[in-house]
Image: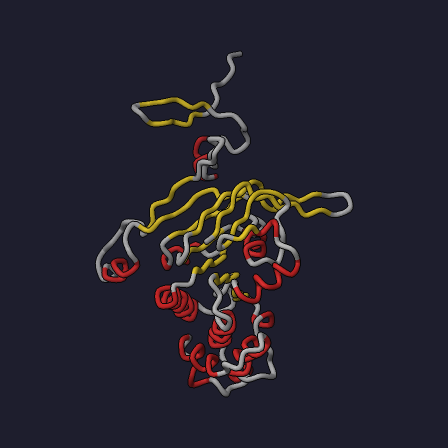
Length: 293
């Protein structure tokens, strides 16, 4: 579904250039549910905006659903955003119109395309567990219920790709778990590709793959050791193993981002040189040799 290769994004002001992405590589399969995590300023929201057609890369390759996003004209981008991608934002004000009911909010994007299938709004509200709240205005809904309406709106035009930016950032932990379970259910039942951007590492327990962004590049990926269903079955047992195994990302030039806690342990935080040695078929990273007096 998504192929990013050497993706670069530079924001320019009068006297400053900021590299938000610095040669990012990422592959996302069709029908996958994955998360992208990273600290503030790591580039994760910039990547999401480019996947959604809200921003253009400065350089590199970005293919979504077989379409080369760098070759898109403005009309192509409008068509892509209407038909191929759905958005769920952390700030509900970007998703919802406050003076409409839940059902009217979901009907609106359907009607704007010229479709008369208003009945789909009821089906979508039922899919997100809110059919009983269809006639309620937004002020009558909790934050979690509003976010569910936002998810229904994002699904209104049958998108192939659903992008969620910090979708659980404004709700409590209980509602957060319910929303993430809803994403899993939609992914399983509809086969839609879902990419969730967050700074919350706890989200890793709910998805099968997590890509971590650091300094504008994918620094590591975490893959689930066993299926989520198996994970739930083991909740009652004393299971000390991590649910995921973490892999560092090796780019085509052989470059590798070493986790910062490893560098701290080796005392390499302020050094740009390391020694590499082959020991019993393994690559060992060593601090530089101290110069003799």
